[in-house]
Image 1 (cartoon, helix red, strand yellow):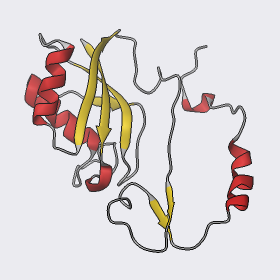
Image 2 (image 1 turned 90 degrees about the horizontal axis):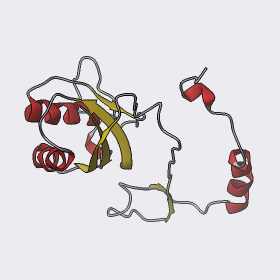
Image 3 (image 1 turned 90 degrees about the vertical axis):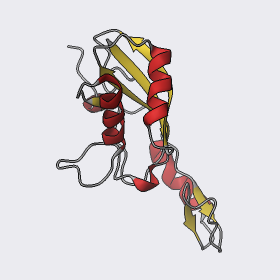
Image 4 (image 1 turned 180 degrees about the vertical axis):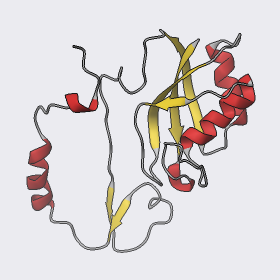
Length: 162
């Protein structure tokens, strides 16, 4: 059966989502695959909707896995969260059709970058924000962001339907 996973993680201690070859540093994909192997006794890949860089966090990363199992989605949810490290959690599990692909079936993606403008360090917030100590030129930032507005063609990042 194919399962889709909705994952949340604090990426501080990880070298991105994608497993590295050889795996010398921990990755989110690596810990997910280890958890699936531990539960199912099968070595199968966990396929993510995208990759995150080293130290990047996710609140709703989507991934899928194909396993032979009698466990249902709720049982998988409980089992995965029982064996995953505390900085990685699976928030939802659902069964999907065999033609579902976490990356190529995605309809939207969103990213959030947070900048903290503060002269002094903030240990409780800096793990999740980029701190800038000097005043920001908000007008210049707004002008730069105009290039991001509007419709853009991202077909090169997907799979052709032709």
